[in-house]
Length: 636
Image: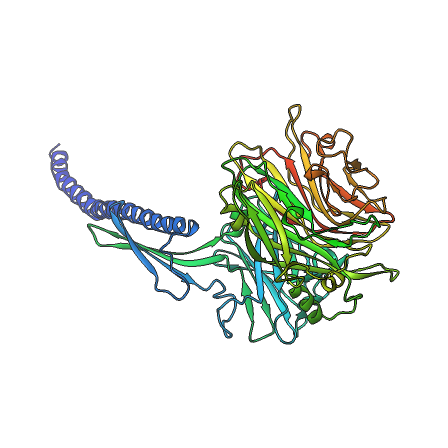
């Protein structure tokens, strides 16, 4: 027993040893753990502070983007000092924002020949169509032919912002040329995608040798020369800040790009007001004005015009030029009060006898002809007021020979277009009287086409003789229904026994129509319309127009639709030109999203200046899908 008791007494020392070991282990494990927990709490707190500062800096970037998109007055131009401003107390931070204008092609091209855009060669681009799955992007290149020597291109490029993707094999237009690749090289750039069509020939391709709009059908010469490249992208949303550019092989005019697109480098630094610690963000913010201007709200179009020549001796040849203002006047009377003018185009077109044959003319000679006719005098007269005249310059001139494939025919015709949106929008009311009484090159101090010599030179008393003008006005108004509009204004000579389809009339959505509602309407401006020959016709969705209950018509037989009487102008006989409006409502149905229009002829020949169509559409609440807009297309 004593030995047993003594053994128990000795066990006290073992317990103390175990306790000491346990305390040591706790000190080794728990203390560092507590230190780690404290450090984690401090780290979490710092992370939270950093996150707050990050969001503060991001708010600075968003504020800068808002100022860029809304074209704030203080935005710098390229070459100016950055615009620096401060935003106070954002998540406990002071945010300093810097906005600097940068060259839009910086990092894409080398500015070895300057960074100033040139008026001779222009590039514009925007979305021209939006569907459920994506959109169609158009790059439009124009050259006025004023440079000495040849102009050759070796690259066309476009930039799409993050989230947008090029659809393989979707490009068209100039890509039908053998030296222009079908698909671009795509690379990541500024968070988005740079698309570059580099031509396969090192010496480049002559600008005029690139396929013209419509594949060159109709033989029209256009001044300035215009070439197009289309491609599709996804998703079906509006890109923001997109732009395009082209590169030539010349040193004097090496690069051209979207001058309506701007790029800004934004720096935003959030400094915490208590700790003085900072978080900095950098971003590129772009803006593009083109598509925003084209995708305005709800409205419709109006078209008016008149002839500048008539047949007074009933010999089926227009031998008399019109001098008096009342003979060349048309009135725009039904645009709603308070409407906004979104687009106004003035067209003038005529036939000339000399030179008799321009089929073999060089580009320089055609440019000289274009420059003779590219100015017109537009007059406006408000109710109770006097005439106010202003000379307007054409931003587009198209020329074509009036020569048939068998060699018959003679002379040439032209179509000029001037953007007069600002002029019409500045009027007290766009609903007023308009006239065109002067075309540059066929006028002198005494008035329109004064003198027998000028009348002869400018082609009176001939079966081909015509001269006329038209004004197309697109407006928006809060009380209007939604409309989708399509404008085709590639000048076209319609030879005998020929058909022309209008391409890509799609993207609208016809809603349920109430009785009496107008579902579709179109206006056509034709030169050299007369009663001497018939067999010209217009088909909408396979149906001849006008239909028997057409509220606009009563003057255009279905087999002689271009007879020199204009249904859109109350059936007035204006001689030599047709500005005809047709109702196509019976041939559209709810849910319809596309349509087909055919213009044809048998023995009559004439010049097609423009067609504009308007469809009632069911607008989508999803931005970018089925935009209510005016879209430009070509003939197929």
